[in-house]
Length: 170
Image 1 (cartoon, rainbow, N blue to C red):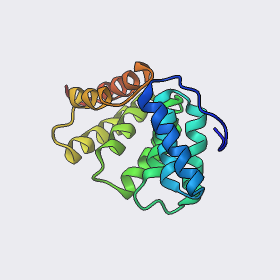
Image 2 (image 1 turned 60 degrees about the horizontal axis):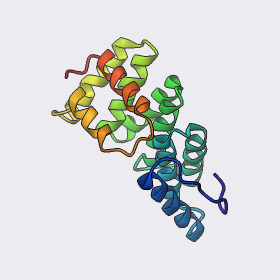
Image 3 (image 1 turned 45 degrees about the vertical axis):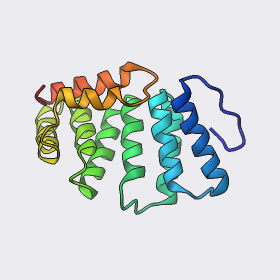
Image 4 (image 1 turned 90 degrees about the horizontal axis):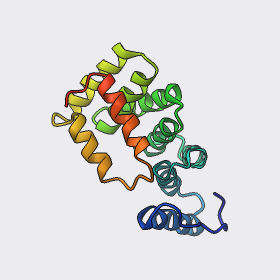
């Protein structure tokens, strides 16, 4: 997705509105790392993982220290969506190192590690997820994904399946 191009509605009003707002923000300030990260999330939820990864890369170039891990987390989500679980685990691990109390970082780390059969590490990440958010479990994670404007249920199913494989309780 390049600035100046026209977005075509394909995935419902919420995602399309998000993409339009990100585009508008970058027209106002082309160096806004937060807008690039939000582009990455929106494209991930839409299922456009190549575009998501591209925008996550831009977010990190614009804010290399990424003190709040937004761009780093966007990268983890995009890589997970693309099925690049090794890379997703690497990015999610970076998120947990910078923001250890952020449950979503642990959620993606556990799910990614489970998908590449690093079960012992995935179980440790699932335990850290429970420490960061005591009510977190499969049903809670499923509820989170039910509120996201996902274009495909496959994304959420892969996270949930990974968490289940990591031993996260229902």
